[in-house]
View 1 (cartoon, rainbow over the protein chains, first blue to last red):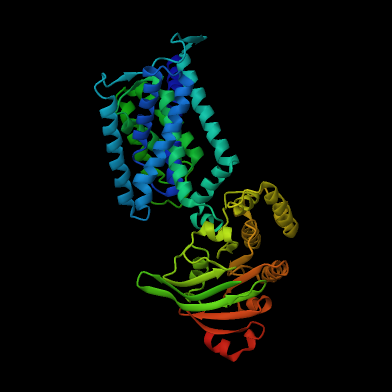
View 2: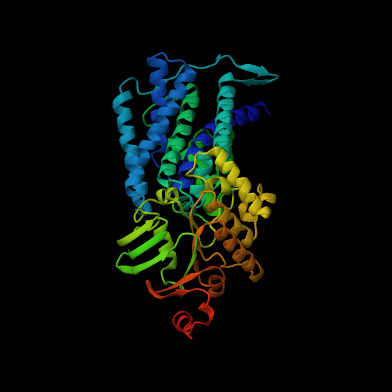
Length: 293
Length: 234
């Protein structure tokens, strides 16, 4: 029972981060119809930027997070301008290749900037490393902080999406681009905003995750796969589905690692993707009409 | 006044509109009739900036609008009620209307226009929190019209507003179009329903194969042998 509780808490914590990564993937896919394969690299780059701010320049944690989110947004906008807008009417293979190409460029740039410093960079803890006990269950405060932070970001994002004009315009452009153009919404700007928002959420996830793990330039793809699995599980176009998918992947991964073998942690996301594609291609909360990815 | 002169539109090597010229006088309702594939929707989409013309001009109130972006066209005072309604089904009626004012920043004016529109369409006021996708076809058409009105247009382009509606609702639609025109709105109505066009428009043009083949008063359309021959093939 104690092991199960620990695994569930650990799974929910990492799952909340996967949920944030998945949200970024879904936001872009929902409005533009394509998967940004550079999303993991934007996550990694933002985390390393926060490391530079916090560890090298001595900026405290919360301002580092805020600056990384702003820089992440800018990276997302740049992704739109470099890898999407110039070829937005091209076929899906070209769009996917463009984001994959950009992913390699970003990873290469990260290796140039942050490589050669031991490669695995550690982020100091933001809470006391001493565990807190709830009866027989020991909880690491860092996990609670990360989970709470991720939930706050999800709520802020949900409020932005439901209550602000820009958020509603993003929804409108995702639902029906033609109708959006006819009322005067500048859909190209909405695509840019979607890429920026998606990357900003990824940046927030990276900075939340940073104190729990090590940062390195090649980390992006593995986190992208986890987020992608969560997005696929949730239905690729559903924002609540992305959150649900993220938590499910995190818990599945933790339980697989705890009860089967730790090596299953890495492959569990791939197994989930395969399972969903075979059994329920629309995901848990996805729409029936699937679009290009 | 909306003046369309020698308008040509092509999709690749296929010419959809060939040298189309006609006027929509200020404050009038003009009908553009034609069968499937005649170029009616392309005409409206060109006027709305969704399609770029290969040649010709579109002058609205003295401003050249050909080739402008859709948001610029809306800012110039031309809004479209698209074919098939195209409301945002997962969003509330209220949100659909708010987004109709996407080009505006005068928040007080937007609120007052929304109140006025709810007075004009009481059913929408009652269902303002409902998802637009859950409304009937006629109510969705009202949402589409109300959404276009939120941009405060001076010219409204309506693409087959009677299509897919029950005959009893079509009568309501005719009343709405007449009421909007009475308020001073210039309307270019694209229709396949010749009866609706005759009921609301003063002038009618028939588009066939991308060309205007008939122009004349709308009142006698139903009995006009030239119209029946060219449009209905009788």
